[in-house]
Amino acid sequence: MQLTLKLKTMAMRWRDILMNSTEINDFCQDKYGKPPTIFMGINGKKLPDKKHCPAIFILPGAKTEGLDQSELSYGISISWTIDQPNVMVDGEVVRWNETLTGEVIEFLGVYETDDFGQLIYEVLQAELMDNFPVSRVDYSIETQDYWPQFPGYMILTTIIEPAMGEELDY
Image (tube, rainbow, N blue to C red):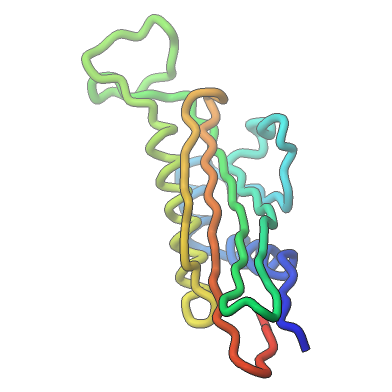
């Protein structure tokens, strides 16, 4: 039997891990007063309305399989976004407006989206570590185009070295 694994199978397991995560739920409740909305797929043309934030998007990505492959590679994309219109100006949290002045202005969404993305990665890695750990992460945060939403994006790749006669049971 040829070793193969559906990306959908992985994505659905990851959905369940994230949906049932106490850490993610607590983070979102503490920061935004609600659990995250989890999407399987995404409208690539625009971010969701702020009523859906915080949001996590699971996007089955790419795989490399075959009988001549010594390693099987599976990449799943995870995107997320938070809605945060507040900034910190010289240590004081205020709603952003163009007239604000100060010595240091910090867009809180930059920090919060990084915290959220890092938490998503850590929750997945902890749950998957024993059987199919994430082998590589490519991670980025977008801070320019969608204010007051702060989206992030990561591709998580799992490498599996198959054994003769092994069946992949994800």
